[in-house]
Length: 503
Ligand SMILES: Cc1cc2nc3c(=O)[nH]c(=O)nc-3n(C[C@H](O)[C@H](O)[C@H](O)COP(=O)(O)OP(=O)(O)OC[C@H]3O[C@@H](n4cnc5c(N)ncnc54)[C@H](O)[C@@H]3O)c2cc1C
Ligand code: FES
Image (cartoon, rainbow, N blue to C red; front, top):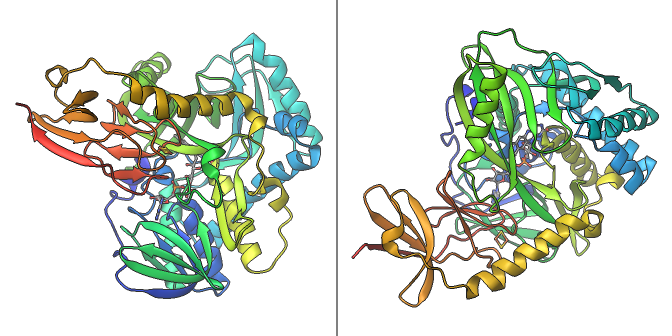
């Protein structure tokens, strides 16, 4: 469980499932920070809004983030300026800086207690080969009008040859913030339904029908705030986005703690901040071990690598939390915010936040609200969601094609050697059994749980994640529990399941 979920006393459901048909102005799909912020702003503007959440509000990325609120998204501005244009780079910077003030304004206006604090953000390196890039990034950000600074020492216990400092960024407890926004949304007449997975969206005349729990929500506007959208056509987001997982540990130490928030410029990623735990004691959050979902062969090391690093920084550290989550990354690294597709008027998308969704979700909520309310938003051109330019990240595009090809064709043809007896307890393998390919998990009691190991999204072969005990999809990042239930989009349907005992 994450520090944030623990700090608001667990991840239990607070809201009933959808159990009747409704008509609203706007149906928001997904109750993370994006959906809740959008719904809150629209309800404040007088719209009748309903949120449908497939699981429990904030149980995915938002409940498991690191929650740095910053416009400093790695070394990004020089890339934006050179790959796109100075206007786009400046638009991205200003949109994300405004998001910090917007969040602070909401906190002040609604009197939200969420441990918000201003602090500086640093992107640092201990590599000679990165120093020139950091220097260039400082110059670029300064040229875009922000007072970034070059520094060569920081208060965090990391080796630092150079760092770019973004002053006056912020951090908070994201769940205290979004839960308060959700309460405010409800007090404004908004509705939210949990355990209400939207399994289809269909246009009908000037309206859209969202189907969940055998009921229909009819609305003029739909907002996909569900991270990876489950509707494949139109939209075609499955061709332009993948998901990456990261791991976080939270630990206590008696040592003096650092100020600010940190991330290094080049993988393997090290991300650091401090936060208040539920006893109001300051602990350290250390993140990293990033990998594309469904592609790391040795996930067992994801936490141990972080723990070893923590011990090297703070020998007396006591690990209190371990958690993991994932986020969507577009191939050109810019979020998709705006119209979902040019053929579905009034349907919006906000995704591809590249692990910088605290500010990006606020940018998205404002762009989408402005569009629904007929207002101009000066940042919408930066995030244009109907663009299609995957070659901006040709390496990742090639990886996606390679993985799709291998998952869809080659792996299906390969004959695995494993036999049932070789599956250790509490683990799984893909085996041939009764003339078919099965993913078989053997639980602690020796009971086998067998699934067809093909993703219910677009059919890629799944990979067993022995750390989380899940079936993960290398193509677009869907995830399924050991018994085949889908819990991470874009998949909607569970896997085909067979249960039997070892003979
Ligand atoms: C390890 C890690 C660390 C991060 N750290 C930071 C950070 O320090 N700063 C920062 O800015 N960002 C950070 N991020 C990114 C940030 O957490 C995310 O971008 C942000 O939380 C995304 O919010 P969201 O509301 O769009 O998505 P989510 O929080 O994932 O919410 C989407 C919701 O939609 C629901 N849903 C999906 N499909 C359906 C459906 N069919 N019907 C109904 N509901 C559906 C899901 O159940 C989920 O609750 C981090 C991400 C990761 C992975
Ligand atoms: S997530 Fe798309 S095929 Fe699995």
